[in-house]
Image (cartoon, rainbow, N blue to C red; front, top):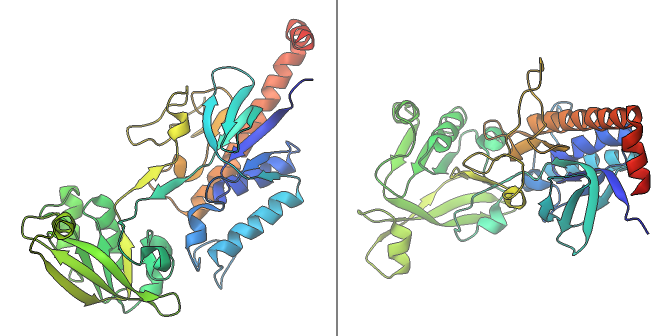
Length: 346
């Protein structure tokens, strides 16, 4: 009995994967969507989304994801639990080993597995993520008008978050575990020279105070003159612990693309693990990767913007690119009797 070969598998059920699923299903590609370990992606951690086109009154992150899933299912997309643990992408059909223990064969694959924000490990972060604790100032900064907020980090991302938040918050305090920033000089100078941005050096976040009903109300910070105070606190060394009142906390210590399963494949990754795509002919951009039949979409290939609306756009692009690729393969097979005969023999 011949094992079923999918036309298209979409890995990931965040906004990029769902957008790809809608477009692919409408094109009668019958996409199979692997929901991943965290169905819905990072958007499910956001309580309210105010900057997504078409929702002037805002929409809950979970609601937006659920609507997208229902829309994709309406057009014929199939959803299945599980994530890709390893993949053989050097020949057709592509073979995917799934966390459920099964294997899938597919002609085309859209990788929309997203990127996971790094968390600090502070007490209270699990409960308060999305309730005053955020990993995206662009997404949630407007909810903190008039608040005092903390930004945890010391790189360019932290400086960008702090400067954006300064448009809304009364004060922004950058918490950094060393006395020297990793940020580029130009970004560091912009933040240092802003009247509403302050820095606390050699300091780390131990705990976040508040509740899902009231949001973030405060934080516990630890300081040591030599830096990396959390390690010294855990070792029982003499450190200074301080309680501060804040209305929001933003993590800006980077993201990790969910691409471990691609590391030994033909898909090119940059030094940080993001999927690399290439230009094609006169097209300004394509979602195609170096592996034939494999496409990228959303935060897994986007280290710059990481917004829901850009991820949705890339999801639609990936579906269109995958559709065109499948059609070109079918056309080439139709023009080659030898290829058709070979497939029949197999």
